[in-house]
Length: 408
Image (tube, rainbow, N blue to C red; front, side):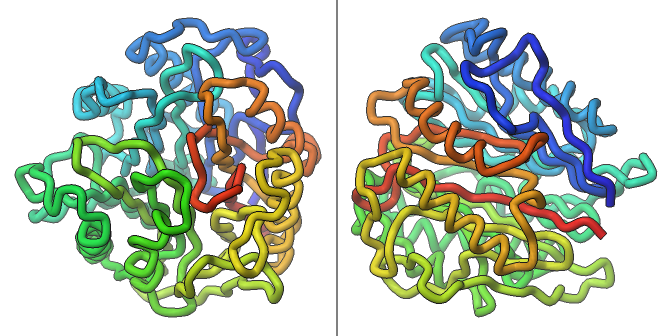
């Protein structure tokens, strides 16, 4: 599987030099990092204009895909981080976005509202995973939209080759009405049942889920994290999944407390694929016991769950020191990568969620980006950096997740 990289356009640059690529392709898999509305030197082109920025971000996604031999119709999984204090009609935003993603069936999608993004005036950041045949052919895909699920402009689930993607799952009924308003534990149970239905529609089960990501309404305390952690953490039998769970101030619609997505893999013959879990001895650990792994490997694919600068008792190491925590967290990422038989040169995608209480403070992005970018040789992995008001545990400044792929 040949590895190719898409560079960042000369007229769309950050304010610091990095090793990261705009996108990376290995075989059929194409990973596109967060695309935003910026020009030379990180200048936001349409400050505060969500519709205009959305168009520019999708244009950038298309450009990166084209450089990697794919196009917008190959996108299987889409993530949209957008700025909203509750005033943005998320349904309208996604409906408008859907018109740009022309493939049928459409990709799975996760949408995450946030108080701010990395630079002042920035309103949206879009990343994706696409799949295109190594010979250039379009790969067939299958959608799962269970009858019990609500109307959604994107697919609730997509299967393409061995890959399974369940988009944003929320505790809604088939008419889109919110169930168990404000009750995070019950909403988490409903979400997991929804994911199980989506997986069944793709010919799979929860046993085939490898990565499970959660965005929940919280304020950066272990108690917030624990409320639904047992539900989501113990929904899968060992060898379990890896994942990331981060708090956000609010979700759409009002009363929604938790939104979850899943990525899985299933053999083309319908058989569950063997996986190698990673839970290194002496690694950091969660506040309560959960059936989760730090990373998993399935064939040539490696998924690394959210890593943080903590000890075996979930206590922050280098509390409130972003640069030091980024170094420690990248050490943990490297440890899991190597435990699963790969190196940092095999990493294709990095997502960093970092604390920025003030919001839209470029210096906070640069402080962690310089450290994590420095762990890779050029051309490095694709990257997305997302500021949050708080992370999942007290004293934690950054959480980093990743994908790596081995070449045959």
